[in-house]
Image (spheres, rainbow, N blue to C red):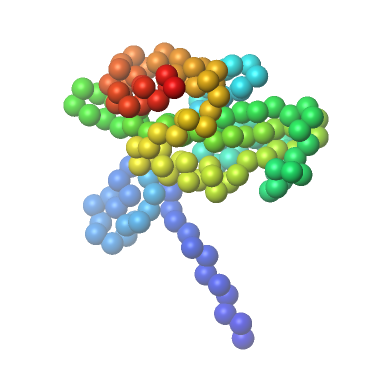
Length: 170
């Protein structure tokens, strides 16, 4: 009899993953302080899209994703950025701790999309660890994102690290 291979799984739960227990929940991932922001490059608009956390945002739905970018029909396609924004709190209040951006392409007429899932997962993890990866974005998109972050919640931008604010000026 052939043994079934066990899948490596983790739980996504809210708040403290251990909830006071020493064993249960250790190694679980808490997504409490991370928010996906979508940015439409063509329209120059950014918005929070909670469903993007599970790859189910309105933007992402209704298309079949190809694994190889060369298979993606470029004509009629639209480019988006999925931005992972991690928030933390210090004595003065909440601030943007990590921000990372990943490309997303959607071709509505062809009902096809392209994104690198490993990149999205890795970038979400890096944002949660306080990393900044926005150098891959075009200047206009970085400006749109910076304006969105500045205007989203009073003071969070100002409380964020100088390194984060400077990254958007490049």
